[in-house]
Length: 130
Image (cartoon, rainbow, N blue to C red; front, side, top):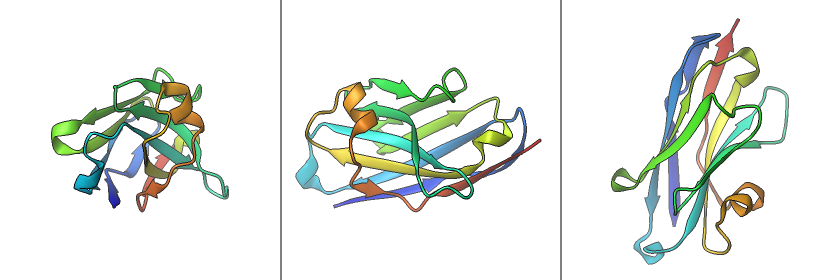
């Protein structure tokens, strides 16, 4: 059982910053498992969720080109928390942000970007105005 709860969304002006958090509750049966965690963004009017940043149990990160250099994904294992620091926000960053997690299997960086995630949070809205 994996439960994810996101927070930290809000409304900011272009150029501003936000930090999203995702607290994970994971059943003890998964202790020691390798994993991938990721942040996804669903833009207004789009059905798809685009992966924008990933991190695995080894701490390896990947980023979509659209956020590289502006966003930073990190994790605090002691708190079972995933973060997304978002700087230099622009209106194209507006959307619903979801935390995703998946355990086991191949968890190297490239596989964290392409795998199908089995666990999701409820999402947190980010709105950037110009």
